[in-house]
Length: 291
Ligand SMILES: [Zn+2]
Image: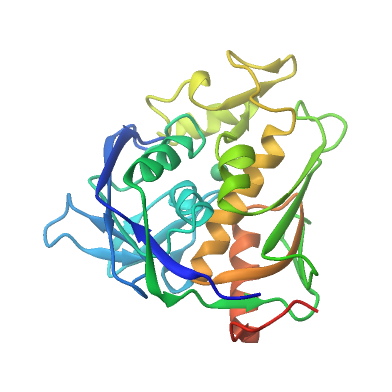
């Protein structure tokens, strides 16, 4: 598979929203960045406006979400913004924000995608490195979820997510597969919203999370179905899990070529698989072909 050119955005773009965790008003400002810069978040609300590169080295442990940290500066819930950037193949960008977390928006990353498309894209001279999966790798998460990476004859990255919380779960078992391209990301993935069980909300509220978040802002599943909302697609939850995979996988900092198959996994398993792939050192030249 030939390497593609790196990309940044053509001009600055801004989008705002409310943070799911803190309830803070957050403004995100995307700025073009030079080749080989990567995605870097910048906290403009802190003195010195510190930066935190979005990569595996700066991951910080979080429950059911992805956070990054450097020298005491942290940014929480980066996965949906990372997914929008990766899905649209924006490799180099500064993401300024004025709060400790990104906005939750409608639980999806569609508003970020629309903002980036509005900014336009700029091809750069440097090529984007590719990591081609050469052998079967598997990671078994603490909760029993499994994620596998394997070589695949098709171009680029294909992800299958099998979501199955058992017959008693209000969330029906579902599966979705996508070959990830900017087109498929926009048409099939970016609109899929995050989801939660109504029985999980009290515990989160007791921790102070979600002071301004309502059932309209994400998918809340009750025994009777989705609360105060309509599904955007039959497999919206599985599609959202793929959205999360794309954002988490992007922390490895290169394109992936291979087939990924996930069953009941979450952010921590995504991170651990990427760390495993990085450590194996499978990064290959641009001429690499999947086996
Ligand atoms: Zn998510």
